[in-house]
Amino acid sequence: MYSFVAKRLAVAIPTLLILIVFSFILMFAAPGGPFTGERPPPAAVLANIEARYGLDQPYWKQMWDYVFNVVVHFDFGPSFQYRDRTVNDVISQGFPVTLTYGAWSALVAVVVGVSLGIAAALKQNSWLDYLAVGVTIGAQALPNFVMAPVLVLVFTLWLGWLPGGGWNGGQWDHVILPVIALSTSYMASIARITRSSMLETMNSNFIRTALAKGLPMRRVIWKHALKPTLLPVISYLGPAVVGMITGSVVVDVFFSTGGIGQFFVNSAFNRDYAVIMGITILVGALTILFNLLVDVLYAWIDPKIRY
Amino acid sequence: MINNEDVTRLQDAVQLSEVRGRSLWQDARVRFFRNKAAVAGLVVLILITCFALFGGFIAQYEPDFVDFTLMGANAYQGVPSVETGHYFGTDIDGRDLFARTVQGTKISLLVGIVGSLVAVIVGTLYGATAGYIGGRTDGIMMRTVDILMSIPFMFVLILMLVIFGRSILMLFIGIGLISWLNMARIARGQTLTIKNKEFVEAAIATGVSPFVIILRHIVPNLLGIVIVYATLLVPEMIIFESFISYLGLGVQEPNTSLGALINAGASQMTNGTLWMLFFPLTFFLITLFAFFFVGDGLRDALDPKDR
Image (cartoon, rainbow over all chains, first blue to last red; front, side):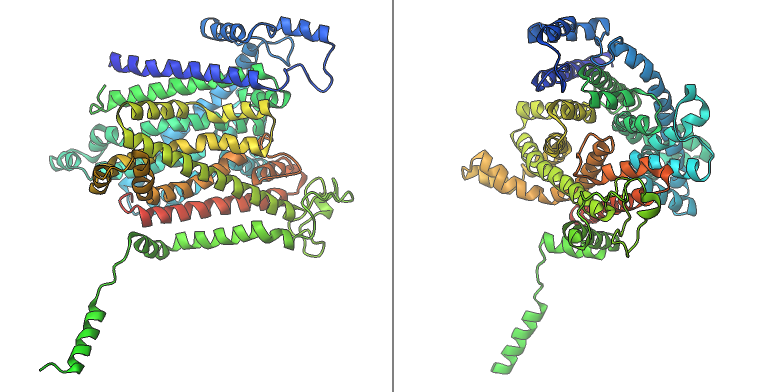
C-alpha cells in the first residue's frame, strides 16, 4: 500500500511542477507586461514597478523564486491589480466560499445519486426506475451554466422562494441554488453509473448465494452488494470533482457568491497574471491531490488492484 | 437429358437463394436506421445545420445591425413578432436575435466539429502509434496523456486566452489541445487488440513499414469506434466553448456563440426579455440532445459489444 501511494506521488508531484512551469512559460510568452496598458507609465516608473515585483530579474531567476515561494512558503506573491493585496489574500477570501458549496455539492451528488441509482436498480422496470432513468438522461446533458439561469428564473423570479445571488456569510438559503446548479449533472451521472453497476452486482453469483442461504435483503445490500457497486462510482469521482471545480467558476460568476471563480474571471479581464496563475496552480494541486485520493481509495476497497 | 428450361430454372433458383453478403457498414446502417431516437436526432441535426447555413437568408437584419430606436427598449418594442421581421425579438442593444442565433449556432457547430476533427486526427494517430509500438514508448506516451488529463484545462485555457488575447483562433487551439486526449486512450486500447491479428502479422511478414501498417491496417479498423466517440465529442466541445463564451472569455463581439447568447439572456432575465434566454437555450439544448442521440445510435450500430 505504501509503495503504491509513493508511486502515485512520484507521478503527482512532477505533474504539478510541470503545470507551474508551463503556466510560467506562458506568462513570459505574453506580449506586453501586466503594467503596459493603454497608457504605459514613463520608463522610470515602469522600471521601479518592475523592480518591486521582481520582473527585472532574469527569467530563470523569476521562475525559480516563484516556484520556490509557492512550494516552500505557499506564497503566490503579490497581485498585479489589487495593489495592497497578495494572491494569498485573494485565495483565502474566496476559497472558503467555494469550498463550502463545493463540498455540499459533492455530498449531495454522491448521496442522492447513489441512493437514486440503487433504488432504481432494486425496482428495475418500475415507475421509479423509469423516472430515475428519464431524469438522469435529461439532467446529464444540462451544463451548469444552463441550470443556473433556469433555477433562478423558477425559484427566484417566478416563485420567489430563494435569493438569486449573493452569499450572506453562507446562510442556508443562499447556498441551496448554487449547490443544485453545481451538483445536478454529476448527481445524474452517478445515479446512472450506480444503477447499471448495481444491476450487474445483483445478478452475480455471490449475491445469489447470500440470498439462497437466507440472509435478509437489507443485509445483502449493505454487506455484500454495496462495496462492488460503488467501485465504478469511485473511479468516476475523480473527473466529477474536476468538473465541479471548473463548474464553480460559472456558479461564482452567476450567483456572485464571492468564491475564487469570481476572482479568477475578474483577473482574466484585468490581465492580473499573478492571481490567475495562483488560482490555476491551486486548482491543479487540488485536482491532482483528489485524483490521488480516489486512486488510493479505489485500491483500498478493491483487493484485486495490484500495487 | 437436360433441357434448357430446367437449366434456366436452376440458374434462377441459384440466383434467388444466393445470400447477398452484408458488410459491417451495411449492417451498421440497418441497425442505426432501426433506432428511432437516433434517426430523429439525425433529422434534427440536418435541420439545425440548414438553420445555421441558410438562416441568414431568412433573417431580415444583419446580426451586427444595431437598431438604435430599440436599444434599451427591447422589453416592449423588441418583442418577437413576424411583422417587424424580428422573429426572435431583439437583444438589449437592439440587434436582431434571429440573425444572432443563426450566427451563434454556426459558431457553436463549427467549434464542435473542429474540436472533434482534431481529436480524430491527432488522437487516433497518437493512440494507434502508442498501442502499436508498445513497450517503453507506449508507457511514456500514455503517461503523458495521463499527466495532461489530470490538469484542470479550463483554467489553463483561460490563462492562455488572457495572455494571447481572446479570439476564436485561440479558442480553437485550446480546444484542439485537450480534445484528443480521451480519443488517444480509446484508440490505443483498440489497437492493442487489433495488432495481434493475422492480417497485421501478414503485413509485418511481407515487410511493410510500421508507419504504413498503422495508416493502412490499424487506423481503418479503428474507424468505427472513432466515429462513435467523435460524434459524442461534438456536444462536449460545444459545451466547452459555450462555457468559456458564457464567462465572456471566448468568442468576442460582434461575433457570438450560443454560450455568449445564453449569458446575455441570463443577465437580462429580470428585464422581462425572456426570449433572449429562451431561443438560444432551446437551440443549444436541441443541438446537444440531437448529437447525444445520434452518438448513442452510432454506438449501438457500430460497437454492439458496448451496450
